[in-house]
Length: 416
Image (cartoon, rainbow, N blue to C red; front, side, top):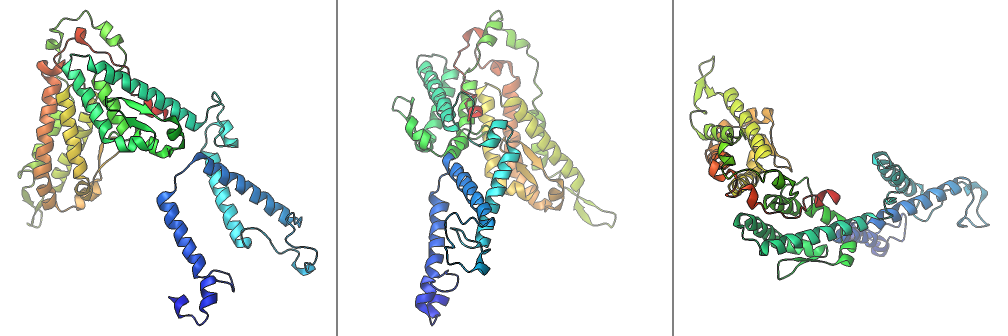
C-alpha cells in the first residue's frame, strides 16, 4: 500500500535507495516462502551444503577481522579510516552474525545430541560398511519387499482361513497406502506383490519413509503390516516345535486371562450409567456431582483401557484384534471431545488422564458423552474378554500342529 501511495514509486518498488529493500524484494521473500514451504523436500546433502557454506563464511569472517581482504572488496583506494569496516557477500555485519548464529546453533545442537563419535565430526559419515543413510533405507526396503512378497505368495497356497484372512487384511492396508508407497518407489502389482524402484527410493524424502514405517505410531503402515504378519503366524517356528507334543485338548485347561478388558467393561458401563452421576448435597445443602467418585471411575477406566491393550494387542485371535481395532477407531474419532475432559491418547494408543482438567469439566457434558462412548467401549471390551478367555477361541480353531509359519517382517520399522 505504501509503495502505491509513495511519491517516489520507482524507488519504492525497486528499492534502489537506502537499504535497497523495495516492494520487489519483499515480493521475492514471500514467493520464496510459499515455494519452500510447499514444495521443499529435505535431502541429506542440503544439511551438508549448509554446514560447508557456513564453515566457509566463518573462515571468511576470521580473515576479515584480521584485515586480510582476501576477496579484495576494499581495493587500493580505501580510506584508512574505513579499514575496519566489515565486508561480506551477504550484507552488513548484522546479516553476517545472524547467519553465523544459525550455523553455530544448528551445528552445536547436532554435535551435542549425537552419540556416535565419528558422526560428531561430520553428520553423515558412516563407518558401518561404508554405507550412507540412504543406502541403509534401500537395503531395508529391499528386505521388506522380498519378505512381503514371500508372505503373499505363501498365503495363496494355504488352506488355513484364519491365517490367510490376516494376509488379506495386510494386502488391503497396502492397497490403501498405494499412493504413499509409490512416492517412495514402491508400487503394488496386479498380483498383490510389491516392486521396488531403488533409484526413486534414493531420491525420495526419507522423512516420508520414516512416517510410513514408524514403530512409534501403531496406526502407521509399517505397524499395521507387522501386526498382521505376526497374527498370521509370522516369526520363529521354534514355538511350534516346542508344542508339537500337545494334544487338541490342551487349550481346554487354559486358565482365564486377566487382560483388563473385564474391568474396562465394568468402568465403561459405570460411566455410561446415570447412577454414577447422581447428585449429592454438599455441606451447604446444594446439589452437586460427586466429582471424586466420578474421577475415581475415570482413572480406573484409563488404567484398564491401557492394561487391556498391553495384554491383548499381541493376540492372534481375530475376534480380539477386530474389537481392539473398533475401540481404537472410536477413541480416535472422539479424541477432541476426550481432550476437552482431560483424556489424551499417545501414538502407541495408550490413554492418559489429566485429573485437574477432568475436575474442571462440566460433569453433565461428561455424562452425555460417556452414555454413548462408554457403552460402546464396554460392549467391545466385553467381546475382547470373551475371545481372550473362551476355550473355543483360545487357539483360533487350530492346534499347534496346524501352525502356519510365515517369514517375519516386523523388524523393518526399527531399521528405518
